[in-house]
Length: 139
Image: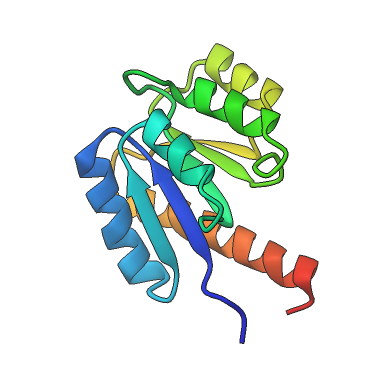
């Protein structure tokens, strides 16, 4: 039996964290979702040996350590470099999209403003990464 799929959501908006938790409860109740409110908190968690998410969902615009800075740090760390990072941002600025891909983000999604749209986005993300793990791990 494969381990439950584990996601880390890094977003300073408590409302967006709650929306994501509600979406995960609806779309993937067997998934594990860990939410943190800052890049620094995420980095500390990611560097702890017992914590290994399958995918990181990352907001870009956060106070303190931005999503770009967290992504840069993750891609420098040998233990973290392989973890897929999906950008979930309200920014559709081409400069942000380009920088995210330059820093090796796996994908970039502009957050839908409606809950139904957000659910649809998350459903596609969950399906993609779970199918990817099945293919990669023969499960």
